[in-house]
Image (cartoon, rainbow over all chains, first blue to last red; front, side):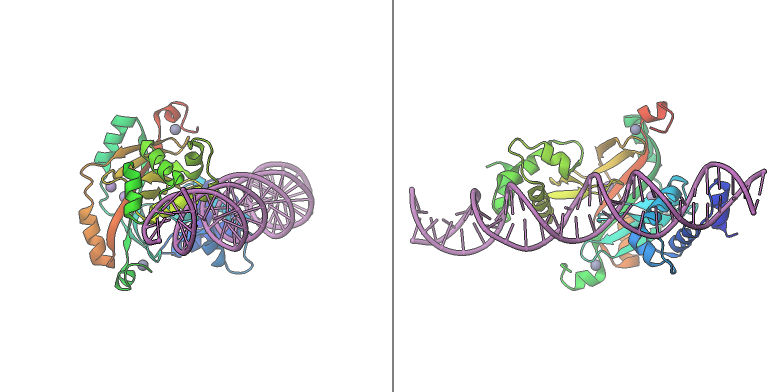
Length: 143
Length: 143
DNA sequence: ACACAGTTGCAATAGATTTGCGGATGCAAT
DNA sequence: ATTGCATCCGCAAATCTATTGCAACTGTGT
Ligand SMILES: [Mn+2]
Ligand SMILES: [Mn+2]
Ligand SMILES: [Zn+2]
Ligand SMILES: [Zn+2]
């Protein structure tokens, strides 16, 4: 019924509560979420962790979800709705994350270099900035 | 006696075989290595995994080693020797990694935007490209 | 309602990283 | 070279994140 069910059906996959919720929750979140974060935001009854992982894997393979690799222990996930390409900033002290849409993100020159030098066809990229957020900086750069 | 011992001593940390070897191995590797990779390249007797992790943590905190977050299960590490800023390309099918020095990597405009919008002081960034390597592309894009 | 494929919870398992602890080692001061 | 203290190391146990096997359950088309 929602856009999500549509997408799943179109891709020939059964629509289940877990999948719809994952897509809804990720879409509402301004930040990429870990599997645990995600599960916590489920309305009760919460699905098993294994189910969350399996669904994240499925949705990723269908291109509806993207994984985000920050320098953390666990992976994060975000909705891959169309053209919401983002870059991120992470605070090295407290882990605070900000994300911002990357308009006119032009790395086509670099991608062309890559094609020539390595023969790789680039389909995607991720760009993260690391530094110190204002709060941590004020507190003496060692949160 | 090597440059490595110097760096450690200067930072007031005991010089041990494990630390020197880690720095040497990482410096000789064209690719960032996982903790396991690293340990395998140690001459015998190989240190305990815990020791490798502890030393990587220490060397990171001293700024001599950087962690690299690709979309893998484990973290990778690279030598942070001065001006060897690199970008990377990863094959989504087979995991092959290429790294290349990023000359004239000018993201200062973006970093300035970040300072204005979020107040973050950016000290570093990481940029990775994902796609398909020539071999995997030839084999039908599904390694 | 029926049949089948695909999904889920649960428990077991794997793999990466961290931690406690007692015995070794690095290093600076005798 | 010896001593003393801080730090490090190996080893085993503990944590965490993520994956897998299996039997019961659900989604979807007929
Ligand atoms: Mn971009
Ligand atoms: Mn760069
Ligand atoms: Zn912060
Ligand atoms: Zn490949």
